[in-house]
View 1: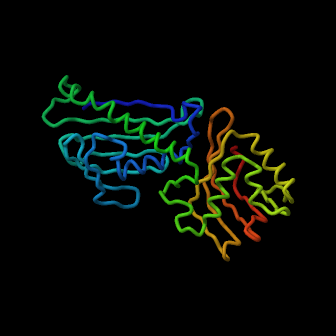
View 2: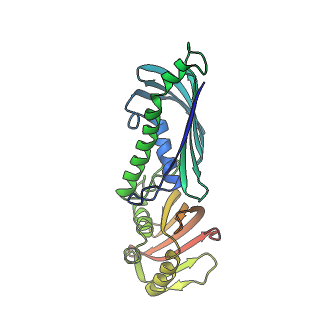
View 3: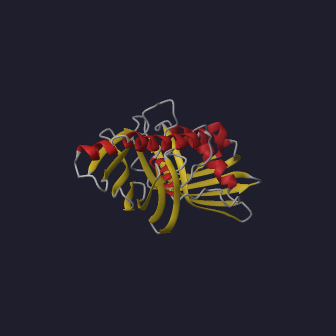
Length: 284
């Protein structure tokens, strides 16, 4: 059995968009369903069966046909088990954090080669060149996620569903994109002059000046923010929008915390006249 493990920092380049755990998870899901864009040495990747939390795919890697069962541990780990072919074993992609709370991605594999003695020099020589291939796949996946972040738009939720997939919630997409920019002027352009903000159990704030002061004060305590919708509904001809969200906040020290939240948006003449935000924000 040939074993190898390596951990990389996800956000080690300050020039790149800050990625959240949910961003990385979405990228791992894409790679699991179709690895061809990320692994140049792979000639085939076809999902042949799938269920809740798993799939089975047939792959051809460097001319070798294999079958893998892929198991998903949401927002934590993807496990690839080789269940068919001449190289049985297990590959894992694990999302974690380091001692300082910074996001990491760990790649590890334990593989054997039929016909080669376990632990032999021949086995090591066979798998050693694959290290660069597998790590390259991880790097290209992160690059693809960063490209999506640079191009803007609400990111794909962990289930792989976009907030605006039905088209009816496009206005909500634009709203959360504006919020994630931390540009208060951009956000307030989407509000009426007499807008109201209810944030948890805090007193209701009224008027654009009040909302500006409240949100700017809160945003000054964080470095970045990312909304990802797990459910969204536009009701009454777009006059009411309800969204269930995973909101990831990046602190100034680079550590991150994700909370579950629910927001209700009320609109008048195409502008948000009231927003109610519900969630437990004490971890922030």
